[in-house]
Image (cartoon, rainbow, N blue to C red; front, top):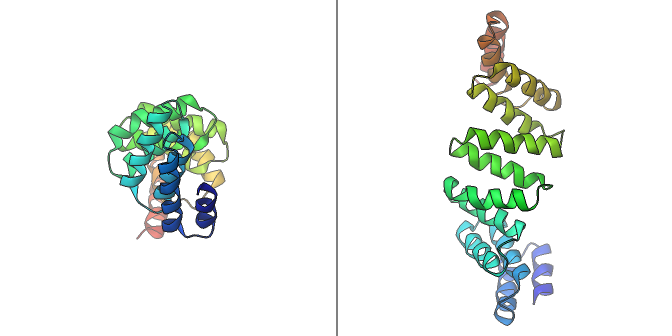
Length: 199
């Protein structure tokens, strides 16, 4: 049943795959990997509520499963429950500190509930794991700017723009940093560039 589900999923027939996984779970309700697979398939299908249900089931079987914690946190985040998403996402990032997507997702969730300290730590971890992660560098720059640390924001934004100079919002953020560092002329030029790109 599990193998058939995987085959159907690879063929893009997720509804049928989820049906096979459901049958497999009926045959072996203690298989955490099955519950996790069901959770992942539901998430890809955009069914956040169902994904959450199976993530909880996988965690009942194995509370220390980092992937199941991440899937639960992601489902909660997709349901607009950012504050509830933090504990499982923190658990995932702690249990497996080498997975960059765990750090990134935790950063996004923390940012959504104004936990800038946690967001910055998470995005810093992401760029430590993956130095070419332009988006995480940008999020560090934005977070540092929100905290009024414009020198640190300038450094992080330079890294981000080296990797992705066309990132929407980069000119605006760079202008804000320059303005707060007393560089009014360059700030005005950057704001104009932002308005040209984002009229």
